[in-house]
Length: 205
Image (cartoon, rainbow, N blue to C red):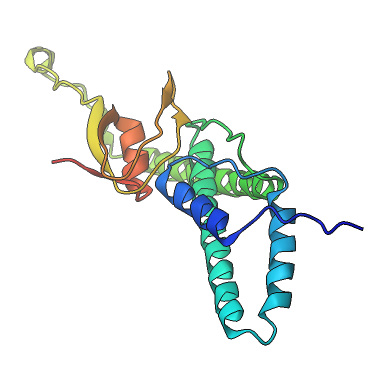
């Protein structure tokens, strides 16, 4: 019976990691990648028995695989965070089944956390309105004075610089991204705040 072909090599794993780290979006992995990796590791383990060089390479292979999925995991967490904040990131077609399961569970967890925060905020606002001083309800004795004041123009966008790659996501009106680290862009104020508060960018002074 012919031996099963192993389609994964040390070089292909290194290239997959390099591309995954370079791009902001999840990258496509070869079909049957997990099965091929399992076969490749089984082959390398057998070769590494009694061979110090092969054993050292096996350690490097494990490090590459762990880093590859750690990079993909960070991207999935960011996609789930954007989805939970109603920024509607596009669901990546390159996500693996077990990664998709993580993505959906994270969305449920993050949305539940945000819902709890919203409930707490509404409680605080309600309590503040109940204890508000009666003086706050006094009518302005000089209404003309308030009419003369010209309202400050509201800032609707902010310029930010990304500190790490961010995959494309859907805003209220259009798709944004993907963005690379060090890229400077101007985004709607709400989106800019989400990116900065999430540690993905800093404000440009």
